[in-house]
Length: 364
Image (tube, rainbow, N blue to C red; front, side):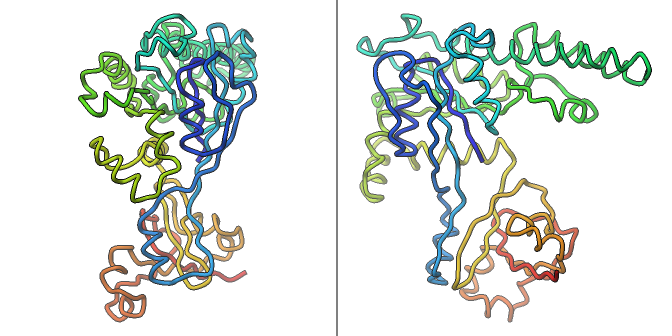
């Protein structure tokens, strides 16, 4: 999973990126501090994997990973190349989902690129640049389809759909808020629309907001309302808190977050939301050589899941020996689980479930 972090200059994006990834990206109090994109790889926390590691004491422990891409601050006119806009939009095109950092904290010592805090305007500025880029793409696709339709009248329905989508975008609405039919989803499947990408709005608050009442921050409520309207996710987060806990021991981190009324860190919440938005789950493989998590799309069948490990596993798939994580933990050992008949033999049509522990049998 690759998440692109975007936001106007100076909203706390690089501070949050550094805190989440410990990647050491430059962060300072002036616009366009980030010019080249920064990339950080983090392990996906999974208590199930930790429990399996205690059970097997493996030689190798491999959690799933998540890639954060810190994309330089977008400004008005990016779709026309302003502020190196084309490059930044190209970086966004490569990610699976967007973490849009929106400034909701008030601090006169931290410069805002537009001079004042206004989350609605900030969100609109970036969304419109993504929409403008999409309009250009759709216009080119309409032109191509019209030429092809001269010899194929069946494409007229496609043109009608593209014209409706273009009108939707021209009204300042993102592609993710368009009500696509299944057929229309297929038509647009290979078209890289930026405003169709899933979004998590990271509302960057101050520490006092968490100590008091998040809902009392009017800027956060604005972001929350916008997210609900376009069916996006919103997470209240504090880049400063994440920076403070990034070097803490697990025990100190837990205590610090507890004092603020938080159960888990911002990183864990972003990862959980990202998996949900993208429809991802994890299955696990376990044994003395290695305990490992594998990320797949929800609905993936066993042979394709096996192919994540190696293409030969998919080509020569015979069956999968499967047990749920909860069943294995209840039994204590794999041998005990087999005695109770809890290890199932599944074939090519089996749809993988989150937390499945699997041994694939194959022959090439």
